[in-house]
Amino acid sequence: FPVTIKSSGTTIVGVTEDFDGELRPNGGTYDIGSDEFYALPGVLQLSSATYSGNEGTTLVVTVTRTSGSTGAVSVDYTLTNATANGTAACGIGTDYVNPGVQTLNFADGISSINFNIPLCSDLVIDPAETFTIALSSPTGGATIGAISNATVTIGDVPPPLNGTYTVGTSGNYPSLTNPGGIFEALNLSGASGNIII
Image 1 (cartoon, rainbow, N blue to C red):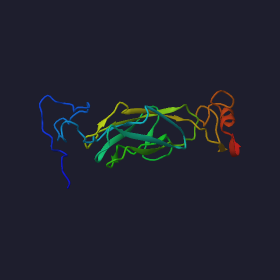
Image 2 (tube, rainbow, N blue to C red):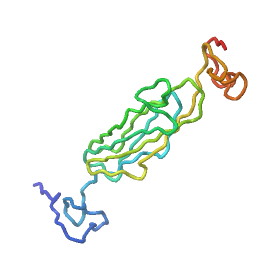
Image 3 (cartoon, rainbow, N blue to C red):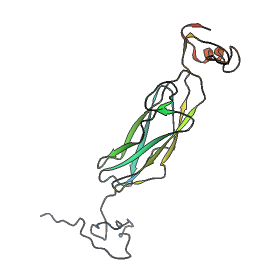
Image 4 (tube, rainbow, N blue to C red):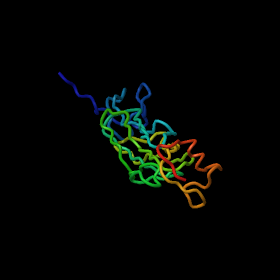
């Protein structure tokens, strides 16, 4: 017949580990005491401290759950501008989609969750740009691990040129032949149609 022994251990002041070195739950319920078999809610962290992706792609970020996966837990993530600009949707002047604070919910037994960040295409040639990801506010007894922050680098993908462009101090390009000029853009990007300068 079944015998219930889970959560039937007793508190012994000063005994913080079971016989094989596993911590007894601090302030929680004990199993049998001599060898705890309770499971932990886990440690949540980003899979890397750095990520990268090119304009016009979707970056996949992974949050891992180690040292236990018992119970439902959650963690928030926040994206913050550095040199890249994030807004609610891709458009002029937007480098990545930033939806604001988001919550990742881990069901019992789930050890990793992916989330996507759209990296926007723009109509200019610019250097690589960056933003950051930060984890916060774990729930369900989970904690945040060592990799709680990451830097994302967006690589530039110059768009092919098509249409009418002006050259000069207030134009689309500052010059014809100097660095950053329209000829350099054509060499890098090519053309998808007729070009009028």
